[in-house]
Length: 361
Image (cartoon, rainbow, N blue to C red; front, side, top):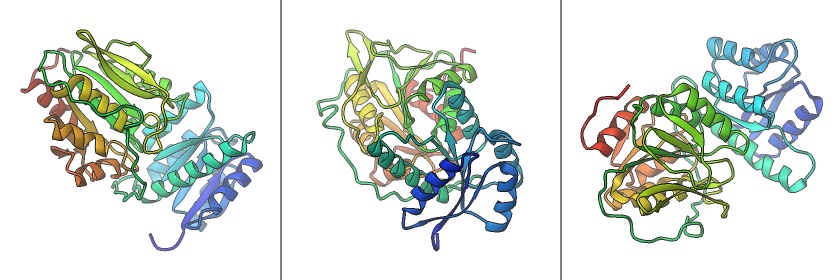
């Protein structure tokens, strides 16, 4: 993109508008070109200022953020980062916004701890940069310069499980755009699909709402993972925000383990951590897919899986909101297949069952 990323900040709070403006303007490649106190003002400023990215509050006067977003995506689609409250209702509405077409979201900034505020600035700037290259109709790729960090500190390397059994596992990792991509994959699963473990980059407080939403919308029983949950067919487990999800084998059963170790690739939960644990616990009884997302988390884990003989899939560039994670996995030779989103569920089942099976309903 030539020049700076032009951002319009939309929020009914003057304090939040000022905070977001200052945070974004602190980045050398971002310029806040305007602010708006409500969607009707924002509508006029979008026309006159032609921003590249919109940050949008959910709760505003005269028109709520969801209604405005729906109108925007219908009439003038553009990249939007939602600014959400960290509440149960805020989480549910935020997931609805992602379904409508928002690229990503950040929670409302906390003002009490300076370190937390510094971390928030980094998250906000990173997500606005990603949104600036994510096309909402024709989806684009992102080259991410983020440094890799090893998952060794959380889960040391050891040999993979090589004994084939009748208990299979599907592992899925995603980030930006992942909530909708994961929904698409889960909706393509039959009720008797193998047990599924999922690492989606998502803040604490939102992972449970996301799991509940998937439970309502897909054929599977989906829940936020708890330590000790047994992974069985027809069930999917979502890593809690800010905790690593690992798969372990306990006798004849696969079990979820939660881990509070250091972030890997700047993320907790980390896709790399999940993938390595699945490799070690299930080995050739597992298949995996890496979906849309910014950065490189999961690329190394997918490569380790493929090198151990597991079937691995990366989402293609054309259907990814951001082709960072799957693109990096492809570049490192980690993907057996690169597929459009709508084909991934079918190919995961084909790989794990070795032949197509009819859905059980």
